[in-house]
Image 1 (tube, rainbow, N blue to C red):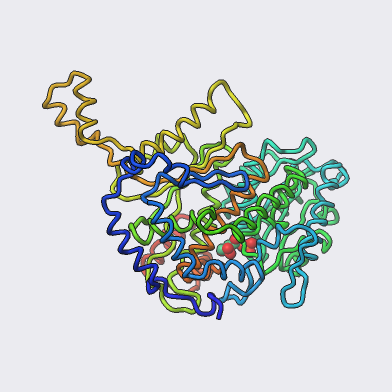
Image 2 (tube, protein in one colour):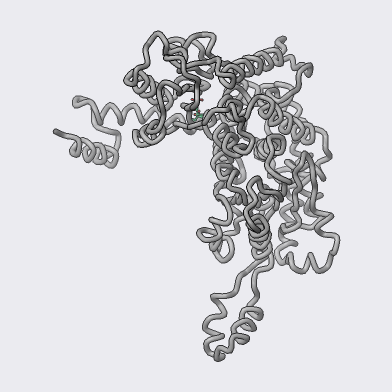
Length: 555
Ligand code: F6P
């Protein structure tokens, strides 16, 4: 029986118990000493693939820890689970669906038959449809209502229909085509965001992509309606609306009902999760910015990571290693959060995408078969671009009480060299992981203060504040520079990391029932805010806040 039909209780596996014992033995493990004792530690605990280099030597591990973690992954059936996902088995059991984002990056001719259908035909037909519209827009053959070429595209979508495309189109700005268009993103149902996004746009030359797998998401539909009103108020006509509104959705009829022409609707499929959809036509804004050949390089990079994940032994398998290190800290050291610290302006949106990818996927407390999990799942994902974080929240990483593992991500080469900035940026990245690992002992702190000539009483008063515990774990991912291929590999790396952790915990990483309750209650609250005869809210707090709003809007 497959892992998703009968998930294991991972805490009952022999390898889990062995890891618990090993954790106790590692209580006083010290990274400084480990590096001093083993000159080959860096070589031993680093790996490269798909244009990415991962140094994981600054972790609370020995080669034996790695062997035990890999054993756990094997015993939990990660390999079989990966094949089940790639082959299109219904690994999303609560929705009885496959999770086939990996199909979106398979090359032409690499057939995938699921329930008698070759899905690759549909995938490549959608890519051809994308190629066609990108070509027409870039060659000024697609024109607005008064025949001017399109200069700006506004992607109207939220969650996975926003975060992945925004991350990639902004990360790959240096690859923007001369003929490309400017991309804007409208996600929130906040009038201020609508105003700011549309403020400098010209309705004659703006194309809206209504991007929604379900075509039922409130924020997206409200923004799409507002965009239509905006367009009509600026000289656009209903007859020419088709030149300004296209859609990406698996709910074709709803898009047609909105007024979008059938041939301007790009497909999505229920076998692709929203947070894994940037590789589909949901990535259209990316392709419009950087061109189809770059978009295809992005897919190829992800495909090479897929192959690595499927075929590389676990000991050198990058996604498996990252996943198991995460399990090590979350389940055996009690780390409740995980920081991502990209040292590159172009990766500044990476954390937002990872938050949805990880927390919406693995924020679950029952296993695939509905039984409660027996260990903690889903850490809090947070972080942001370095060096900015150094002057804000890194203090907590260095001297706070919680253990927070971190991934540093840094390119060697900048797309925009300015004086020696890249050397300093890279140096800052490395010195942060070094500081986390080395820390500063009491003796070092005291010696430093004495060297400044402070009296001994001052030395003793200040020293405790200057001690930095160190021994704090991190990974460093280095890439030569940000390119479509390497970015594709990087994103796919984390998708597989999240998947592996989901398998270990026995949960369904591809549904998101938790977000539904808020949506349902939202309708009731809206009714009470706007309708005068609606029944009171279920609780006094919510009713009080409703009354406050109504009081402010009266008259
Ligand atoms: O509400 C959560 C969610 O369903 C995400 O999983 C998804 O990415 C997002 O909303 C947007 O959904 P849609 O593409 O259907 O508008």
